[in-house]
Image (spheres, helix red, strand yellow):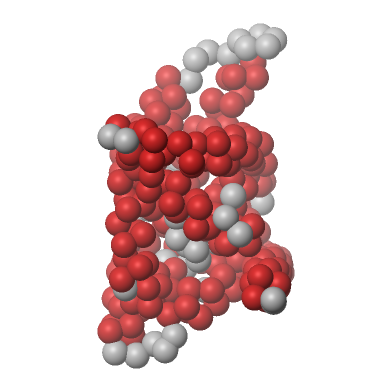
Length: 284
């Protein structure tokens, strides 16, 4: 789930579905608020969340280094790969939203228009957003992470926070490792930004998870129809990044197309594995 949360287009929620832990994942997050009221209610979820959190944190530390390298050396190819993942991952929420008509069709349309407009807004360059801006970004990102079919990093991507988070994360990890040899200057800006991001994530985990659980329970089809439209409309952002980095050269666009297909194949493989797991669970 940690690796998935770094890559726009692969939802941590989808990985949780594949692993068969989605329900305890959502229930465990919903139980986090009981830490302040009834600790006994949280007790059954404690070990599960601690192990899951440790795994996600380990993957984040290693994955951020890799993603920082890819974005600096192969930006067009990396974003094209993301588009392929996102396009083919649309199958999951769309399937659960069927039949798409009436309110579901309206929700899909509203989601697509809203995401298209939001993803077209001008954003500041990597590294420039103020630290406080990372707080709401963390809330929105973790809200998306809880849903199958949409990833938190995708939300960061379309709002312009993805590259800053990767850059700041890379800087802070470099600082941590430098403590074992020659210490680098403390990255105060990166530390404050990441602190605000994780504060937003923490608040989102304890509050938004309950709202998402209620939405999926009462308005499952409408919610997933909206998400499907949102994901499709927000493809405007990574598509514009591919075009800007490829500089409209035929060779660059051809390479980007290959990586788009590779991303699609990866998403198709994940969907096939999920289908196989569900079929296995349904057998007597």
